[in-house]
Image 1 (cartoon, rainbow, N blue to C red):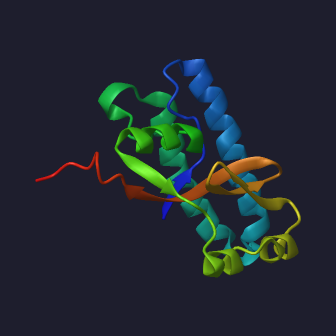
Image 2 (image 1 turned 60 degrees about the vertical axis):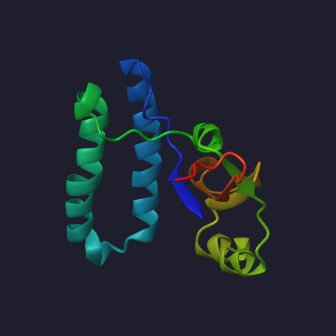
Length: 146
């Protein structure tokens, strides 16, 4: 199973990258407001500064090899994985379907949602896709042999 953060923060043009980064991290901060209890506020500040803050700084302020945060959309990942001689396995494992039952997230907060697209299982917040999961296997005829 492959999981990816769904964000187009690897745009070559600064303004496009800035816009996508703001959009993506606004969703991240918004969900933190809902899922982290008030008594963990001190820990949240540390997480926001040390993890999310560093990611944002790297995406916005760095270019070339100094920029290590290069999030792409799940559709871009789909193309990349296919080019690496993998084929997507169908969604449908009954156990996975039980684990990610929509009623679980819906009962937690109605603004969380999930769906499927082209073999990807999607999870999001307020109609913005946050992350995507899919299963892949090597294509035997194209696999590299050692």
